[in-house]
Image (cartoon, rainbow, N blue to C red; front, side, top):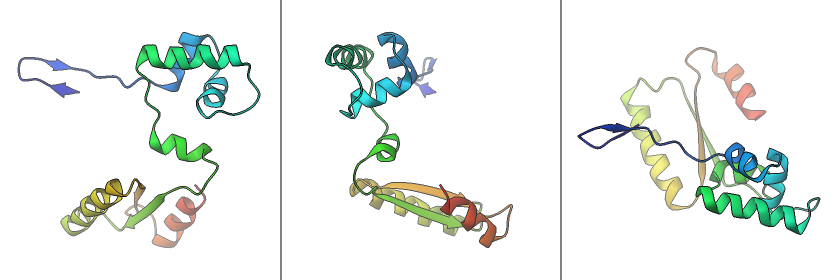
Length: 125
């Protein structure tokens, strides 16, 4: 929600589903078109790219990393609790540094599980 002082405006980010609906194709086809993958016609690709441009679609950096053909630039941070101001400060600094280097950050708290179980869970993602 964006607050302008006079009124609250809900800003909705355009999603891959929105582009798919506008172009009349599946999400998978949108992914193929946006990532220049094989398996779709030039006409379909053109239609998807045009729909994305009309809607002002901007791909999520995180989502792009899932289909990237190269290594992802992702860091993980696990802390015992984000309620501790020390960890919150570290997380903020990490996010600032990561953004300047075009890295993604996945953060998790082991507050509700023992750390070994939490690490196993998140390392599979």
